[in-house]
Image 1 (cartoon, one colour):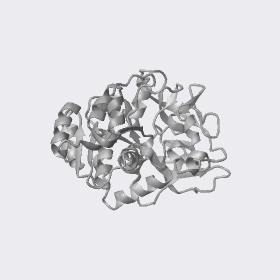
Image 2 (cartoon, helix red, strand yellow):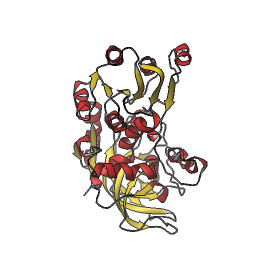
Image 3 (cartoon, one colour):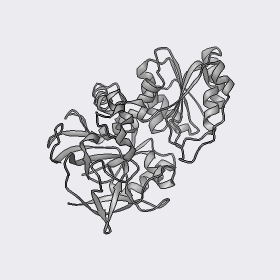
Image 4 (cartoon, helix red, strand yellow):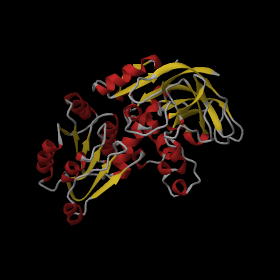
Length: 369
């Protein structure tokens, strides 16, 4: 079938919205008519080259919609099912999945390759095959994806907002609850109060943190963080250090979650300094692939038994956590509607990312007809 898609043809170029040919589902695949796609910062990393990917590529990795066609052999999805697309496939059979780490599924090795889980490419444009971001390519109103990427959800969830749970919301909440192991009464610092950081704040609140300090250079984001129940804010880690000292009587934070738009080695020393004894620092931010320089006190790491962890998808299990977070949204516990600053059409995708760069959006969203 013919449809539209936003394609990145070269690094530091704009997204080009144009007609593409989408193939029918192969065995194990489904076609989904999307209601929405999130404008996540990770797709901006494709543009800047921070994330290595095979170009050209159809962007987008947060999507929600309705299954329209089912390929042979698909057993857990049917036409008419409402689904959220997980940006990491989860096969349920590999060592990672079967040991409770679906976010580390072996199929995740494909998400920057431009290939699909079932092999080959499903989209053709300008006479050549085009890859898809995270085996999804949600900057298009129709996608063909492997069943390992599509997670069935309840039919009464508004699909326009549900797409956000495919990456950013779950990553942030999981970074607090799972990776940082936040517990009732903890003091938590979140560095970066954008789309991921705001949800880390939500996760810390859900886990019962007493004090949540949002660190961001933008005053608007610091103010927005308080709406999501951050108890305090600071413009940088130096200001946060004095604040956390006062809040904890010099015991410092139980956890620090790094959610800056671009991960840099220079963030680590400040984050580790904010930790108290036995504290956990979580690196959720995507860093440029060639970033390898990190400075921190190794003596402090040992003597105070601090930990520095990476977290992919917030250490969440997509097939468990995506439906659960949507249940919590429907119960009024998780805020999704309030995350969306502005909704765009597909043709406005470049404006959406310019608004992200300019700090105008907490989350942008593409709504399809």
